[in-house]
Picture 1 (cartoon, one colour):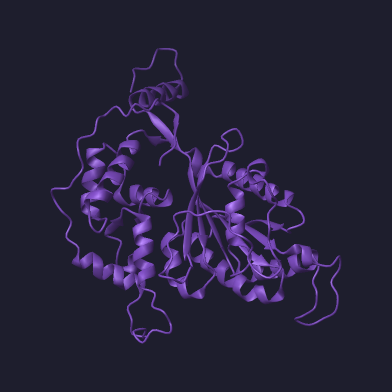
Picture 2: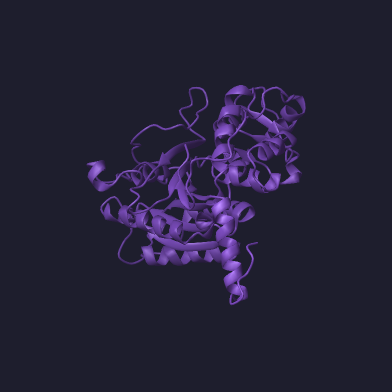
Length: 375
């Protein structure tokens, strides 16, 4: 600590100490966030994911959520499908809004609504995220809506959740009739959704947003809501030592050198030391996982908390390859779970001791308090 002057107060001394620390330890903000879009099949998740990434000027047309399906997709990303099924269990794309409107960069995870892949989804869910739960305006959607809410509660109860109700152009001005096939107004359906949320409990639900194909401006409003929620998240304003930039670069380099791209936690600890990062392995690994640079399993019950998967897309491919076709004769109730299979792979994997972190420099070239956008 710098020596206090004769007239300085304890507060002044502390401020001087903090200023000296920041001069010697440059910091940066990593404005990266996951936007996880979950919900039922045919609700329009993929259309929303595609349209969020484009402003009205860039889209050139309004959002299209047809009355019979999920709407038209507008582009390809890095999602991974299975064989010739055409399904993408998780479709991942990057969304970089205009910094004037939102300085955050999003990794959009568009989750398939198929129950076939539910067991794999918790591997990619995190509390450093905004969740969009998408469903059609229909009573039949409510049971599966609760399933998704329970899944979010189990992995990220404190994360902000936006409930997005699609195909609202079909709603009458007021509810008519009774029974499961009765037409519901948006207001009455919103009350049913609220009951489902209350029954699950313990969630951070922020908004109920209705969308219809006749009102494309509603999607622009949803985009603004997402910007606002991102701005309110305290995790995005937390500073990190600038050497995290070196760590992320090392992680990307290790991906190409390790096959499979899995690192034991003891090797990751060495990597942290080489990058001069004073943090626990778990805290640093969780941060990388939250920002989609790696995947870390902090739940010891999975049996894989001693590894760090350096390539999230590789993990998707690996997990989805374990999901057998229900019509296949090789599918059986005794087949190992995705978590068990990953644990077996970890046991069989020997981490190379020669492919370790290269020399890093103490100066990352990142000025104090700067904002760092990575890959």
